Image (cartoon, rainbow, N blue to C red; front, side, top):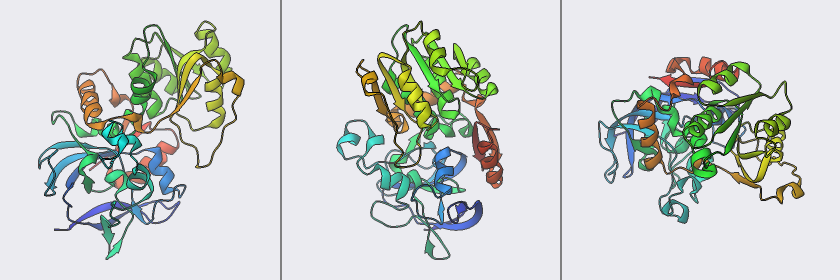
Length: 368
């Protein structure tokens, strides 16, 4: 049966979130109805809400959900009613990259997650007054009291861990962690630089602190965030507003440059600084996403020392392996994610947006 629920609807690009009653379609064979307990707010949500990405509006966003399964489709085997779940991105499960353990590079990733607004077969998951809305965002659209989610978006998690404390694992945290663990893979004594100390950057700092890297450098312009980065495992910090970032990194790495850099800001100027700061055979991971079509100028000869630039989506994570491991680290206190989170009642979503945009809250989490 279809389900009526309350959702935060974006009516048009640049409009605020408006609470509205919507109708969820009944679960398809590979879908589940989830009662939302929490949902993280991410810069990707704000980018789509602003109209910067071609997602169909009016629509329901949200892609860092966490909740409890209420009902499942006829072919669902991964979860059952009553299971606690973290909601992440969806994927087809059958293309070369999905079969190879890299679902974040699914052949259908863009339409199924970011810009399609509907199921793969073109049908709508959410409607209002009989008219379809943009939905199926990352296979979930979790800015609602209930979400109709793809089975491949769902990861069963430990029910003893509060869901509000782990909702951000669905996107931002696994992105920062995956940049370090899945791409840089620091070896003993290596150096990691994180450009930008937001939610993704600080997740990368925490991940780097759990590796054999002995130098972990956080770079930002906000003093409070640099202080937090030190508390979360950075061995050094650089105030980008007061220092020459390249010179500071060179000094902190004994003139060698950084073995690994994670760029989270989306600024092409910062990206260029990161590439120039790499050591020979160093790797920079591009995480921050500027507007579509943005280009960056690089010194080609500077790349000939074996430097690598790697783009990254969602940490290149296989969610059913990575997310439970991260939940265990949160539970054991080894991934202090609570230091980033500020909670807001769902009805105060616009306040959460304002606080995130103003830098007052690193990772807002809506609670239901």
